Each structure stands twice: as C-alpha cells, then as structure tokens.
Amino acid sequence: MSPTSTGDGRSSTPPTTTPADAPKRPGTFHALARLYSFAKPAMPRLFLGMAAALLASVLALLIPQVLRQLVDGPLQSGDTSQIWPAALTVLGLGVLEALLVALRRMFVLTPGTHVESRMRNAFYAKLQDLPVSFHDRWASGQLMSRAVSDLNMIRRWFSFGLLLLVVNIITILIGFLFLLNISWVLGLIFIVCSVPLWVNGFRFENKYSTVARRSQDQAGDLATAVEESVHGIRVLKAFGRGKHALAQFTSRAEDLRGTEIEKAKAIAGIRLWLILVPDVTFALSLPGGVWLAADGQITAGELVAFFATATVLRFPVESIGFLLSMTFDARTATDRFFEVMDSPNTITDPENPKTIATPEGRLVFDDVHFRYQDSAAQYPDLVDGVSLVLEPGETMALVGLTGSGKSTLTALTTRLYDVTGGAITLDGVDIRDLGLGELRGNIAMAFEDATLFSATVRDNVLLGRPASSDEELDTALRVAQAQFVYDLPLGLDTMVGEEGLSLSGGQRQRLALARAIAAKPHVLVLDDPLSALDVDTEAMVEAALRKVLATTTALMVAHRPSTVMLADRVALLEQGRISAVGTHSELLATNDHYRFVISNLEDELDRERKEAIR
Image 1: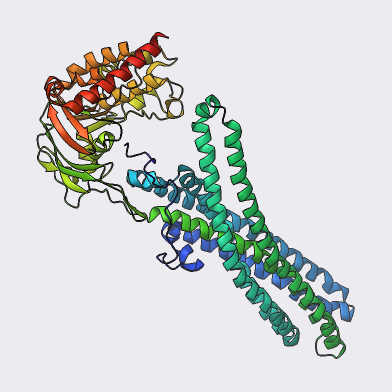
Image 2: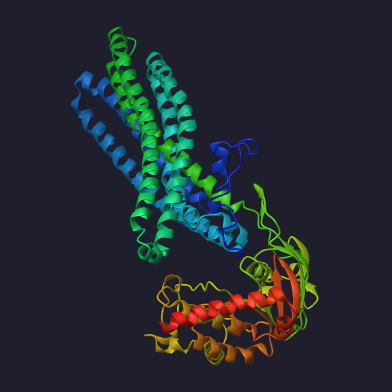
C-alpha cells in the first residue's frame, strides 16, 4: 500500500481531540498575543497609528466643548464678534481630525501587509518542513484556507480592527469623563445604562467564537471539495458524476450558508443592544437634562455640550459590535494558523548529523518495521521485519502482490516516513543520523504517480540538481526517452501546466524519471516509474537505464516482468516481509509464490498489449 493512500482508513481531515483530552481553550487576548512575534517589527507604526487615531477622537470630543463656550458666551450675551472665532475653531478641529485619520491609515496599512507576508512565508515553510504523515491527515483545502483567507482576516484585523477597537474603547472612557465633568447625574445615567452592553458583549464572545470557528472550518472543507473536483474533472466527466459532485458541493455550501446566517444573527443581536441602549439612554437623559437646566444646575451650553459629546460617542459605541466580531474572527483564524504551526515535526535533522566521507551506495535494511501512527487507532505493521542488503552498484527488484508493502518500503529510504522498528543504513550510517539534505542528495526517488510543477520543463527535470549542465540534462532526458520535450512550443523553456496535466501520463512519468536520473544519486529508488509507458517505449527506457544502473545502486518496485529482468537480484515481498531473495531464474525455479506473482504480472502485460492493439 502506498504511504500516501488514505485507503487504510486514516482521516484526510484535520485531527481533532475529544472533550476529555482537549486542552483548555486560551482566552481571546492570550490567543491573539501569539501574533506578537510576527507583528513585532510593525508595532512602532501601529502605535503611531493608534496615537493618531486617538488624538483625532479627542479632537472630535473637544468640538462640543467649543459649542459649550459658544452657547454660554456670545450667544447668550449677544456679542456676535465671538461667533466667527468659535466657528473657525470648530473648522480647524475638524480639518485636523481628518488629517489625523489620513495619517492613521498611512501608518498602519503597509505594516499590516508585511505581517501577513511574514506569517504566510512561515506557514509555507512549515508545510514544507512537516512530514508526509501530516499531509496524509490534512485536507489540502483546509491548509489553503488557512494560508489565504485566515491570514487575510488577521491582516485586516491588525490594520483596522485592533486599532479601532483599542482607540474606540479609550474614546468611550474619555467621553464618559467628559460627560461626568459636565453633569455627574447625566453621566451616571449613561454609565448605568451601558452595563447591558458589556454583559451582552461577553455573552456575544462565547456564542460568536464557536460559530466563527465552524464557519471557517466549513469554508476549508468547501475549498477542498472545489480542489478535488477540479483535479478530478476528467474522472467526473468520464463517469458522468458531475451532477453528483454538484449535489455534494451544494449540500456543503448550504451548511456554510446556514452557519453564516447564524453568525449574522449573532452580530445582529449585539448590534441591537449597541443601537437600542444609546437611544434609550438619550431618551432618559433628555428630560433629566432639561430639568437640570431649568433648575439652574447646569447651563444651556453644558446641556448642548453633553448631548453633542454623547452624539460623538455613538459611532465608537455602535462600532464595538463589528469590531468584536472581527476580533473573534481573527482569534479563530489565529487558532487555525497555529494548529499547523504547532504541529510537531517528527522527521528532523539530528542534533549532530553524521556525514558519509566517500559515498558508495550500500543500502541495508536491518529488521525494518513500519506502521502508521495515529492516536485514535492502532494500525498493523505494513513492513514487518524486512532485512535486505543492496551492495554498491547492484540493482535490486522488489516484487510482490498489491498491498504487500513495496511502496511503503521505498518511502522509508528517504525518510518520507521514519521506521518504527529496526534501521536503514547507507554506507554503514543510520539514515536517521544523516542530515536530510545529505540523505536526499544521496538517494533520489521516482514515483509511479509522477508529480510535476507549474514551471518550465528544465526546472522540473533539474529540481534535485539545479546546477546541472545542459549536457547532463540532455543525458537524463535521453535515458528517460523524454526527447519529446524538444518538440514542445518553447522546448525546455515550455511551461508545464498544473501538475503536468497538459502532458500524457507516460510523458509525465518519463520527465519524473529524468528528474531522478539528473540528480545523479548514489542510490536510485524507482517506485514503478514506467507503469504508464507503452511496451516499445518501456523497452527503450530499460535499455538506456542499464547503462545508468551499472554504476548506481538501485531499488526498483517492479510490476512488469521486463522490469524484473533489469535487476541483478530480486526480493520477494510477502505481507510486509521478504520471503525470498535471488536471481529471477533462481526464484522461478524454487519459489511457488514468486511464480504466482510473475504469472500475474505477465497476465497484466498481455492485457496491456491487447489494449494497445485495439
């Protein structure tokens, strides 16, 4: 079974924990504080933006004080000469407030994009560093949604939501002080009436955070569905399953729509309080203020200033709703981001890596065991005590029935997975004691499922050895019978489409084989890289491979008798164990199971030949 297969029952969705073993969820402040390491370089400009925004808010609160002096002064005394200075003062404060708002935007917009960029680069680097077992468990759409939409949400919150939330809360507190200074009675009414806002704010966090998390997870599932359908569009069309895929997608989209409506209802609930409470407070304060003014406890100017100040505070109060929802969205995005960043990498460079002074290519499997590790299930050993020695320059064919563990065994050689028992050594050194760079520089792999990247043919073939000369590149292409690339529109500089789908399966396999050969490894691991080739092309590739394999240690998974004939020796893998090793002739003569396997391979080859004739 291929190690990248999910047919063994492992989940392709993010791993979850049960309530009993789930760690306690940190508070919103502590969760968002984890962003500091990425935001630290941008903090000075963020603080400058906050200062500019706060000063603009203070200027807005000063305008009612000018009106207070205007009403109690020239308007009462009839001295019209003082009206114009007051009007110009209000105009000046307004212009200065607008300039500070523009300055705030200038300070914070660019740093926010830098924070997002640093986080996205770190996220991508982490994905490259994490082992294949991590990617087996996680759906690609979930990772894409974290890398794009979640980080975009964090950037918008950092540049806008965080700043305005802090500034507006401070503005409300300063505004309350102004109100109390004007009239402690009316100010006290405002403070008492604001209590329901804070109570409902805390209730809103608990409700909205849960729904926001569900929404973002469902968006990731939806992205996975789109990606799978696009990549599998040929299969869906060939089997006429487009409507079925659409029905599944529609169901998931409807679930997301329902969750978004639930989010909207939660936001509407908090907005109701944020709009209703100030209006009720105004209604309660107005008769009280008129009575205080009539009783001479406050002046007409102070009454005007009080309600003008309360009006200035309306936007900061009403904005708390969408700023809180943005904050909780950012908190959920932060949690999802660090779920990946906190994932442990079990396949790393050793603390003191060893080196191979003179690589020869002697590969030894010493009682190797491997099973998939999962906290939720215990899988049986797929590789169950394999012991095998490949001498330098030897070609070993690995033969067995489907599911015997061939692909899994080859994946262990480059530490795509780590053995769970025993050891694999290269020239006498345990591969876990080698740096990953050195190990994968000495061992190159070509997979049956040939993956190409959206890059030029040249870049794809020289992926493992970018500094190779044109002559070395041409040699690798000739060995792999991939000279067809010279007939492409731009030759070696032709861009290969996403995953190489613009090429045929055989062309992709030949380029993948050329990529492994161009790396010039000391050990070449071939996981049936010729399965998509026709019989004649395969024969030409095999003839050219004989020259390459004469000086390179090779471990080949063989699904065709002709591939077996390339090998010096053959290892028969049976239910995760090596049951026999010998030459092709020896095993044919002495091993019943080997004859059974070879007969199955020959039957498959006959079927392929008949299909080719048709």
